[in-house]
Length: 467
Image (tube, rainbow, N blue to C red; front, side):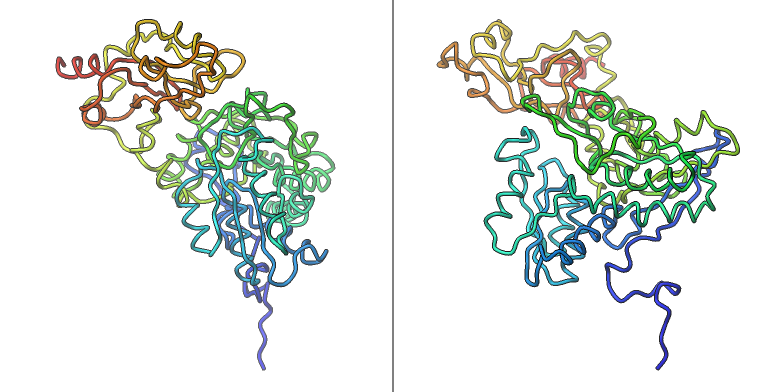
């Protein structure tokens, strides 16, 4: 009987064995002003489609070995999608039931992929403090307690998460570069990838390799205020009502030498360039990580070798970062130029006044004072400090009609009307006006995901017709 040397020939006895050994691909065109060598490690080529397959495999195998997960058991996880996908694929191949709890802002492609693997998907509201019963971790823990034989993977605090990268990702990169790597870049989400890989590379290099974290601009890891951003699967969001912000045990901040804070617009622009200039269709967190790697590489010389993790594929985000409808509605750069005028060309936006908003912690009396003689105002999640409101943190609106019978000391959050219509600065003005045909009253104008201005629909229509 002829046998094949499995790993040498790329032949494996199970799906779990096929995880890892992803290629490094040099970036050639987006680095035309850079002398350092920059490689992307294409983790979307894992069987489940992302770097999270590594942690999923390690956590699953550890649970089987410890007896926490037995035959016919149920795998439960709280995930932004990728760890859930890795667990769902591996669990399906090993005969387990899978339940994944995801926030409602996750891409619809990820939800469809999870269900395609037979996973049960529970969508939870994204704007919940960590100790709220509807927070995704709280829901996952409740389901684990209710279901006999259920095991909670707990990627944020599971030591098998960073251990997977110490055992696989780090050694692969060291071998692939022949020990020449000088800088390692990765996004920080659970922290498992950057911690485990960074620890290995520092040890292998005698602490010579520098480890750089890529973080969304408002994520608290890099010093942001924790408000929402639009690139999925990276960073650390903090609800303003969170009493104690606990960072994941999987993240060891001391491993990271430097953090680059990347705004959504920079990450999205890099994604579009990678697709059109390198042929790489990557997910949002890859845009964050590679944007950070390019920033870094511009400071380096020809002897430096930068390796950056590209966690997943853009195929899971076609309805977001590659959709001009989604991009335009949020005022982000489009993949293709708009024919004719955009919303941003309106005269009313030449020098807009700061929009008046009602904080979610206000009383009805305070809302009335802000509303004055106006017809409606947006209500936004209340945060300390200044800064424009993120449209994803707009909870609803208040109008004279819905406050008419409310007590002055009532919380305004108990009297919310529907959110006001939104239009994005980069979308077609023709399309935006067409959507506002039946609307009268204020409209939220959005630029780069944040509220730029509050403009009356009548003013928008009048300026459209005049020009």
